[in-house]
Length: 455
Image (cartoon, rainbow, N blue to C red; front, side, top):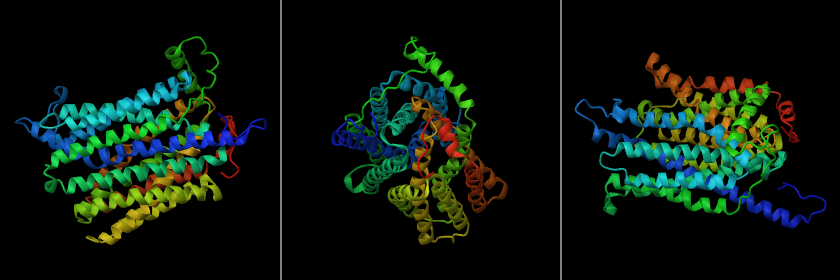
């Protein structure tokens, strides 16, 4: 489907179809962000650790697959395993999606595998830590795979000059949906006793609700999005879906090596995005351990970030329309550096100061990610959207250990969380310098696309 009406078409039906499809696309961010906010960020890590502690042997360890490990390491290793598997799965799945032209059918299967695995976390109780770890690996693998297929619709739904706004609206709806369910779940958890529930029962209901929400709202997406098949890569015709996809994936690897500017953007993105993810993930630890803030303050700050990120994504999307995507992202990276500098000087026990930092983080968080997604979509050769977004997701997830490693190493060497949080400036400064020197207009033209008017 064209994103603009042709001369011999009546514009109204095309515009209506496009609006309907875009609404379905926005809805998928709303449907899936609850997995990140409710499951990954808040509830599953502590709950799975508690389950593992109950199952620990006399030596204090659990032994999944015969491997001894402390219960506190279980969730981290489980998360790492799910990300490791994605490194192998996402590029091939992207090639199959592009090759087959059946993205909607693939998104349907991945969505409901992920939603059902998430909802099934309700049955994780007692000492069934292996069940919880296995279900999470399946759910997170399906989640990452679904994101690759979902992202690949963006070039079909928006012309180059519209892409920032469309991507930002999707990301904003995700923060709104994720924040709304998190509010409801935290309300349930904090009032579990008065409702006759144990804390464990409340957590199981919260985890299940994320799967139900995902599956329920995915219906809106799946009934509105349409397939947009592209011709197969030359030289891969007549090899079937899987065989042709493997050949196409090999061709894409060779093609990617011939596109140094696209590769440089992926390196740039993984650097500054690793800083973004790490700041978001360690902020609660910094507030608790260094600033001595209570859990209620940290939970409130998480909610502040969710809802402010909704407005921030839309605002940065509008700024990109006026000043260009590259300039807006660079501006957001400057704000990230300032936020980290301010965080270094926060006073112990000062909740208002911590909330102010949370407001700033929320404002640039969604916009930085949304604009990066739309910018990368400009660098993809037509017909290879899912494959390239597979590499994009790998650069997002596969290097997510770099920031936490630097944070932990700095703390180990200095015994200071303030130095540890300040060390993350490295990712934003280096990422910003690389982005400022990247000739994006040339990279877009080399990919066979038309650059937007403002870049």
